[in-house]
Length: 91
Length: 267
Ligand SMILES: Nc1ncnc2c1ncn2[C@@H]1O[C@H](COP(=O)(O)OP(=O)(O)O)[C@@H](O)[C@H]1O
Ligand SMILES: [Mg+2]
Image (cartoon, rainbow over all chains, first blue to last red; front, top):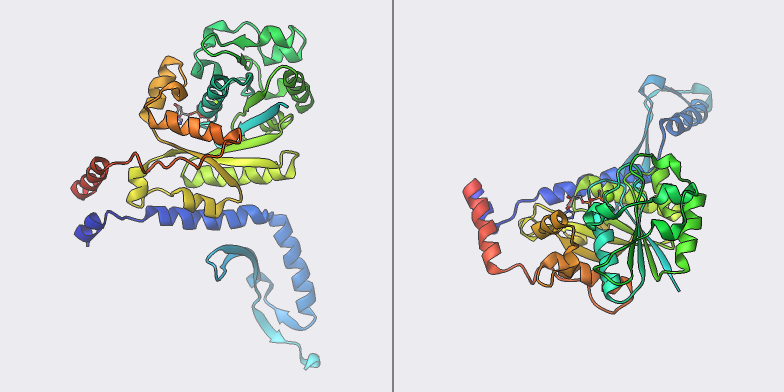
């Protein structure tokens, strides 16, 4: 393997650098403060609680990157909302 | 028509001062009256890079505080016709000047100069705000490293939010042998990531250290690749229709063999 690499002359730490950068910039550019995420979290919780009983401690809201078809990244608001049970009267 | 151009980066040590000195020197060699303004108050070194450190009498803060007139603080570079330096104060800090005062200094310089180059300190605080205050255009300097490109992105965002909408990128310290073996981001990688146009690229070149030791900008060196690269980007800056220099043409077979050998032997 190593020999093959030497002949090709290619290692790829630059690809690692590029990927890390793209992820970093998604966060930087989205410019999200923890306060903003807490606000979003609070409001999502209020709305969803009308319909289902959610596990408040397990609720997680964050900004992630999403790979588009052209291989660039866009920020995405990702919410993970564990449901304890559905509310009966709504069904 | 004169133009005020700020050279900035966010991250320190990426080549702002070196770039300011070289572009300014070549502009004056091309016949433009050029003023270099060091806004790195407390950490001045444009004077040293230009080899003018022994000629300083007054500085930027003296002008702002009315201790002298602007013309008295400008140091004339005797080697290059039409090239002047306004040094930063060394014993004060960034808060000794505010953006309003910087704007009035650049406005006054516009009356006498074709180009006014502002060497910006690292960071995004007061020093940065001072440096961009009177600028028409910004040159953002980065190197092919994660932290430098990240900071450049931040700076581009701040410039966009300011009045300086016109900005271009300079990628400094490219090592072609590392690019070849996939261990350094190349120009396309960086241009993919940053939303900005490319003005030029500068190779990593030990001749820059040598020329800085002597206080003579590399751009006067006919032979060095870095000198050529600085002439190329300055031509593009003033609107001459030349393509970005190809650092590859000067990367010969010998270098390629050498870098190949280095990889094989290190494994
Ligand atoms: N292309 C280059 N090749 C080699 N050395 C360089 C290059 N550009 C800058 N340097 C060196 O890097 C150091 C930092 O450069 P400087 O222009 O002072 O950066 P900044 O003003 O952004 O802090 C200096 O010692 C300079 O000589
Ligand atoms: Mg500097």
